[in-house]
Image 1 (cartoon, rainbow, N blue to C red):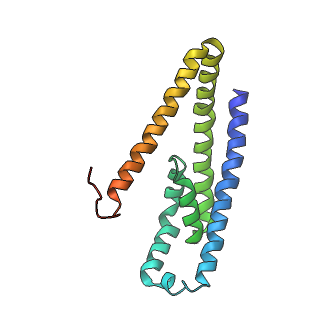
Image 2: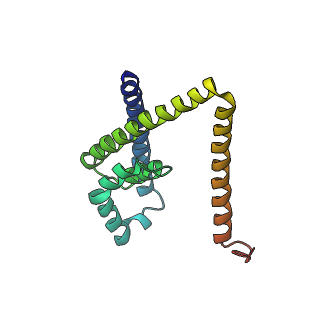
Image 3: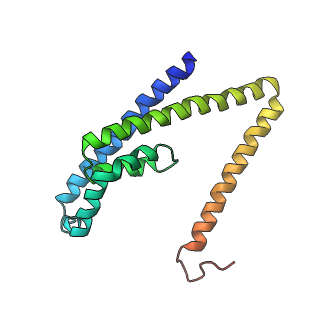
Amino acid sequence: MDRIVLTAATLYAIVLLRAGGTFAVGWLAGAGARRSRFAGRISSAKFQRAERAIQRWGAPVVAVSFLTVGLQTAVNFLAGSMRMPLPRYLPALFVGGAAWALIYATAGLGVLELLGGLFAGRTALGVSAVAVLLLALCAVVVFRRRRAASLSPGDGTAGEP
C-alpha cells in the first residue's frame, strides 16, 4: 500500500507540474497572439464568445481530459490560451490530476507486477504477452493511419482501395 501511495504522490506532483506548465505556456502564447498580427482575428465576437464559454464551462472539460489519452496537453494549453481564470482552472487541475495519478499508480503498478511475475516465473509467457501488446499497439497505429489517409483529401483518390 505504501508503494501505491508513494507512486500516486509522485505522479500527482508530475501531472501538476506538467499540466500547470502547459497551461502557463498556453497563457503566454495567447497573450502573445493578442499582441501579434492575429489580434484582429481573435478579437472577433465569435472568438470572444468561445473564450467566455471556455472560461465559464471549461473546468469540467479540463478535469475529464485527464481520463483520456492524448487530449490532456491540448486541453490544458487551450485553457491557458483562452485565459481560463485560475480559480476555475486550479480545482479542475487538482481533481483531474488526482484521478490520473491514482489510475496510473494502481493500474500501472498492477500491470508492471503482472509482467514482472510473468517474466520471473514464465519468461516465455512474459515475452509472448509483451509481444502481443506491441503487435496490438502496432495494429492500432496502422489502422488509424490508414483510416486518416483514406479520409484526408489528397490526390483525389481518397477512399479508393
